[in-house]
Image 1 (tube, rainbow, N blue to C red):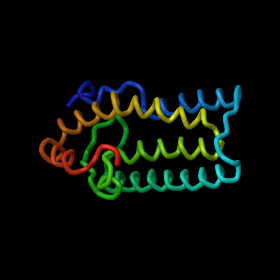
Image 2 (image 1 turned 180 degrees about the vertical axis):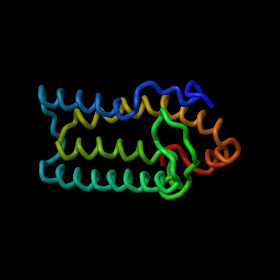
Image 3 (image 1 turned 45 degrees about the vertical axis):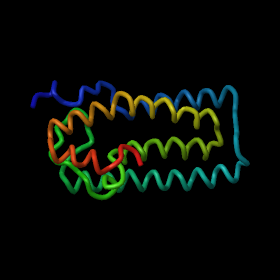
Length: 154
């Protein structure tokens, strides 16, 4: 399979997260919009971020064990359906979304919380469908069974 037959994703998904995170921070600096008492927001934010980091680490561990990658510019060498991939087809994206939510709580910023929605839409409409098509081409029936048995998100 040539590089042209990879996912077709031009912008690394993490850049979508970072760009909307920056927009949220700028909006919060211009017009702060707290939504919880500060102590509660910080505590919840720390907890959510801890869960998000744990999810990312767990997913990364299973990708490394399978000797494959999440990089869109490198061919997948294995289909991973263990660990967090038993629960969600996209635990890395869930972890990144969780980090954004955690940062929004930690910073007590309604703007940051609102900025979670655009990258989710980009992922759900453009990124994940391309990844799924690529993985189906790569792994065929095994991946189609996986699609039937594991939800895209949760």
